[in-house]
Length: 99
Length: 190
Image (cartoon, rainbow over all chains, first blue to last red; front, side, top):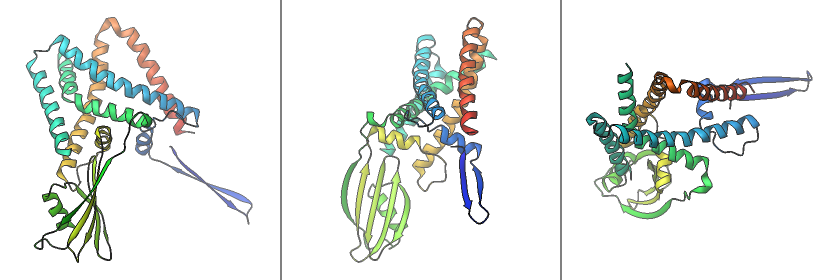
């Protein structure tokens, strides 16, 4: 995830040449956000996969509970109704056009 | 200020509700692939290209789009008899074999199911695609990504202003940041 170590054996000099090709931080974060399979060989990656799974379920729970909190507390708030209708309409329209 | 952040959090959150749910569900699908069947429906059809249409891939793609096969033109290859090309939109792929001599295109259509489509939407990014619909998704997911950052930050601010829940919130936030940053540093420096 963080990069590649290239090891080259130089027989004439009887030495190893080690090149450390490091991924950029953005590339690293992009790769890390996709680590979700729980059967990782490295314990750090396995923990990260559990953490990501927890984050996925949390995201769904936050979306559902947030909408519930709106409906339970201020369902008649006009601008909130427009926001919900607008966002939902855009998603459904794009989905239908894509389908 | 509290009122402003509370309203911003509410408006952004419920406007992005379905997009966030799409990200969540498609992430579950990617994390647990055995839970879902992702086999696409594959059909094949032959399309006659009218004689008025030019013999180049872009014109063929436009003609196919006119007949309802919409997507971004990709992977154009010249073959002995004509062209091979692909047209994509999230969830649907058209693999086209076109023969110049007969002016006929054989089109293999792969259509993903609901979860497959969500998966493809999850991966949409950028606004420089050759098909406007993918660019429209790109604009939306860009806005939703920015909204998620604002939602996270405003959510922490709103919690911080709720004095009765500061202690438990601080403990959870500290554990969360501790685990997240420690793991990232350990993996980055491994």
